[in-house]
Image 1 (cartoon, rainbow, N blue to C red):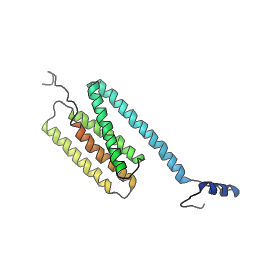
Image 2: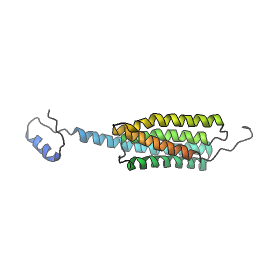
Image 3: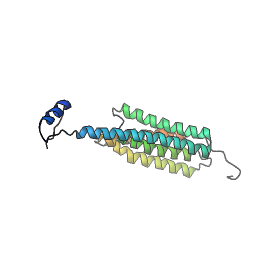
Image 4: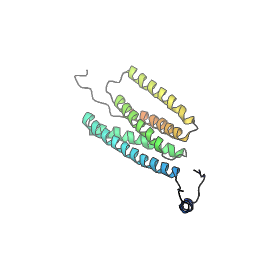
Length: 180
């Protein structure tokens, strides 16, 4: 087995390997790239599927207008995270898409809590504390030397900040007589 580095003419190497009996050229990097591309496409479909499910379940739970607002805010948070990722000089990869899936769940939680009609001071303190600890723990990952971890952290931190800010604008649930 001979490991080749920085191959510039893959076709010529394949032709050369075909001339020798028992010799084959295996492109591990190309195979991994194809596998990661396949999973990126799958995760993108999963994100779209989750957003559709969130829209349907939220429509049943809170009505179409609130569901549409929550789904729009989640999509805007994901878009902001991707924009900042690209602005930072990175491309969308498998790990950034995993971060977007986590972001979608966190953003929906913020929307649910902030749209509550009975938002007490202790609840707001708990939400701010959860936000602060999440940003501190994931924010440290931005300083990683591994690009995959850095992309994950950039998507999550910027998306969480955006989701938190947008959740303050969620339409509030109306208080019924039973809740008073």
